[in-house]
Image (cartoon, rainbow, N blue to C red):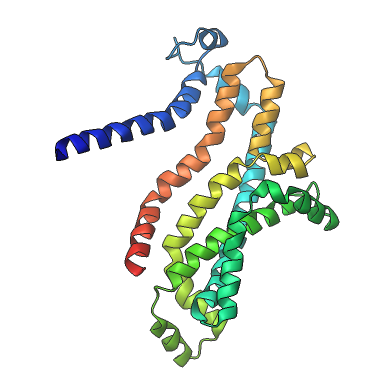
Length: 272
């Protein structure tokens, strides 16, 4: 009976893995095909066509979009990590009811869909004079990362012994110094978890740049893919090559960070 359960379990896992990996593999295979091969719906290309990647790499739109996405992503992650972790330290160490209220208030934001806030967000960004700027996107990304980050950091910090805080206080460390010298270095697993969970959404975001950015030189990679596809509507091989290159950064980020990601989950389970 146990053997049958294992067979069923691994069969389901294999099916789910194929469902997830097939679109990625299909885009990769099509990026090496000529248009004739794509129209014939063949599984593998007759021969590797590197011209598709050459066409993409000679296109300025790809480099501009990639640089903009990196700037927006890195700035958003750094700011959200510093702000959210520091706020969570206060929420986790105080027992007054008002801090519990603030904690629940932050978490309640996760129940509000982004689409419901679009009109308000656009109005606020416009009043701040941040339309058509990367700063506007960064501020929205930071705001969107706060609820999940608050939950992650608060839960993790509660598992850190208070004796560390008391020892730091005896040594003369103030509140801010105590956090950034003692607590913050211990948050590495949770920081990696937040990076992986937030970066995918920030990197793949298309609607917000479409709504807020009008200048071509400020648009991220998702809009660059859209623009490239519009300009090369009949060159499907080049379009798939552009999609494949756009997928590489988040995939590499996960591959190089998965060890810390899994150790963070294990550490959180032990500390909780």
